[in-house]
Length: 185
Image (cartoon, rainbow, N blue to C red; front, side, top):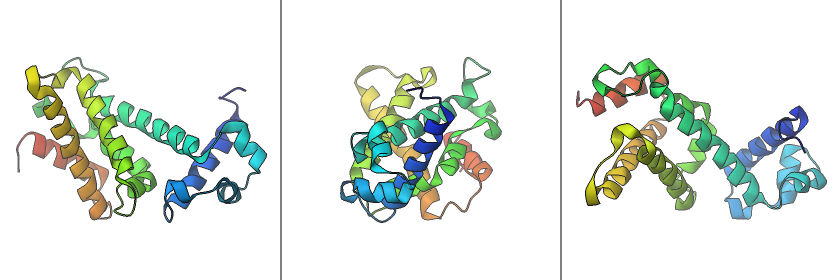
C-alpha cells in the first residue's frame, strides 16, 4: 500500500473529518465503526483495510496534527540559529496559524465535555516541543517544572482564545503572545 496514493490520502482525510464530526457529540469510546463508516460514506471493508479500530483513526489524526504543530512551533527558527524574542516578528509565529487551521480539532480537545486525556496528550506534545527547543534549555531540577509551566501557559492562551470563540485574528494572537513573552502587558 502506497501511503502517498491520492485515493488513500483522500480516504483518510475523509475518515478523519468524519471522526471530528462525530467527536462533536460523542466521546471516542462511544463511536462505533458502523457510524464512522456511514459518516465518512465508506464501507467497513475500507475502514478495516486502513485501521483496526476507531482509536487508530484518532491516534493517526492526532499525530498528523501534532506534526503540524511541531512544524508551526519551529517556523521562527527556519532562517536563524538563535531566537531573540525581543526582535521576533509576529508574522513569523506559526502556532496560532496551526490552531486556526485545526480549529475543529481544538474545539473538541478543549471542550469541557471531553475527557482530560485529550488535554494531557496535547500538553505532553507541547511540553516535548519546548524540551527540544535549544533556546529554552534550563539546568537542574527545575527543568521538568519549567517545561510543564511553559506548556500550560501556552495552552492557557489557546484556551482563552477558544473561550472567546477564536474571535481574535491569528495576527492579533501572535502580537498577544509576543507582548506577554516580552512583558509588554
